[in-house]
Image (cartoon, rainbow, N blue to C red):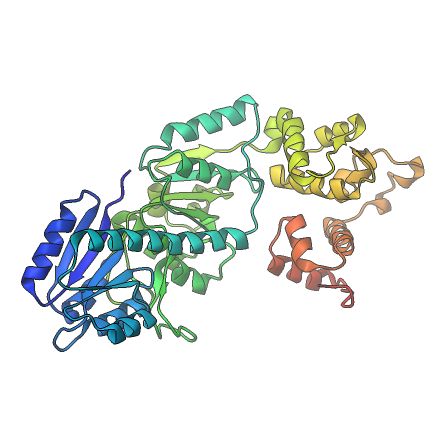
Length: 462
């Protein structure tokens, strides 16, 4: 899908705005709006997201520099090109210091102007890509490939590919660790929007009071510590795909605002009064039964119908156990590139018997831990102790180590505490690495440490 770039031309000379609009709109990839004064330009910027703004520096009352300052605060990804009748290098330096992308004198050369506009478009895309990449780097992700040949899994992939090139909203359902975000990436990468941003937001990991601001942005002074205006993720994803992970955890007040956005494409920044509009495709995911959430009064029924235009259900790892050897081979190649390893038949038998409540993510973490623990190029059954539940499937000696006496069993909390302590010690009390291996957030790990009163060795923690 070819994107049309939005350009705002601001000049009090009507002949200049007419020429610029005509020349730019002769090209199929530009849509141009015009304003004849700074006040009108500011009003437009508050309701429309522009890729490029061409600003005349000298205008009565509200100058181009005033508009530039406003853009820097309220639409920082918009690239500004200043226009002036006089070659004034002092003014040029001032505007560039204030955040302008470039500076062109009038009368302008059409080819030079067009080349500058195209460079500005490219620079804006780089700014957005940098923000998207930073979010990807900061996000704890699951496995990075869709691996499996089981019929139930191949059917889910086939269903995803069938609807990838449509504009329909998609709800991906499945237990935690089944690969819902991987399906969201597939839907984006095989759609006409593949060259535009893919922006993921984990709705469960962001405090409820901040989620609205994260999605829709906020204006300067909207709340404490809002020292500058901030664009929301819906603006960053404009033209592309917005992935709402764990959408079932959104609070009801935010659900109402999300529903309005899904129906109209319009939104308001927190603390703002002007409506803005973007074009994004929504892919959402949840491990909850949303209709049960509706019956319990925790989720809006109309929002379920809006999100669930098309649904894809992902199988659990228990439902596709024949894929376990393929997944293990995939993870071993990723985790042990320098020293390739393989799984012994005994260890494979243990891995095949286990029911994998954490699904593919749990399997990945077990293989990662076993790769580190094994002392040679073969992972044995005894190297799987990193997961206490899984270790229960490993035959141990002496047999007396396993007892059927009722008082030998431990509660789930006790098992979890032991497991967390083991992984903390394994990572020398590094909480970030421990949380990643356990497949939980650092905040969740902190709460569990407090809950189980686990003593941290502060001398070795990093």
